[in-house]
Length: 252
Picture 1 (cartoon, rainbow, N blue to C red):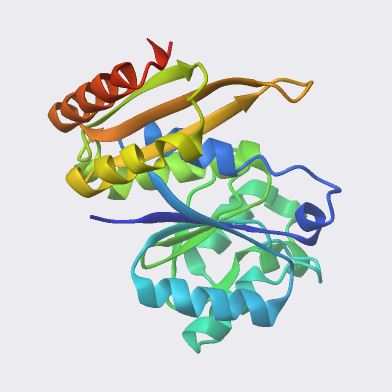
Picture 2: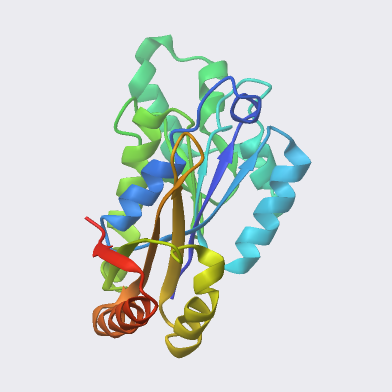
């Protein structure tokens, strides 16, 4: 099963000057196609760290969407880091050059052409917003930090290269909202461990809810995975919480 990850790059994100808009969106785009985001990493605009991260993720074979740092200003270092990770130089990509010339017409100049200078040997990713492309290295997709550009480019990559994986997980998620004296995680740890052991392909989750004054509201306890196994696990959970005198209702 392929794993999907995201690299979100930019000093402005880590400093809090800008709020990340990519994590939730890429998870949404994947979920809409029956896929799951496995991991996310946030990085500043530090070339050596980006390059080291890319070497690791390229070796892992994951599908990775990298957001930010591919512009032409000195603080944009993702293109250079990707070239370093591959051990190649940066060159003006002919397809990118055509797109950029078409975008700017007679206002084209060398500075704008830098936007199409990518690691040697990559393919470009079309940008429907303004025609300034991103680039692809194997299963790594490098797109701008601007959401209105980046998110359609991610959708294009998913539809173009991974449609055979859509809905391959065929997973469902179900959960109970538990209330009462023993409806807290430590009191149900043995039940959770039993479910994990007996249903190893399911993803179990427990999410306590706390009111603003610090009082426990409920515990959301559920599983995600193959429908038939989810039904079995939830039936087991229901029987056990009833035996322990814990009130339950289905999560909306």
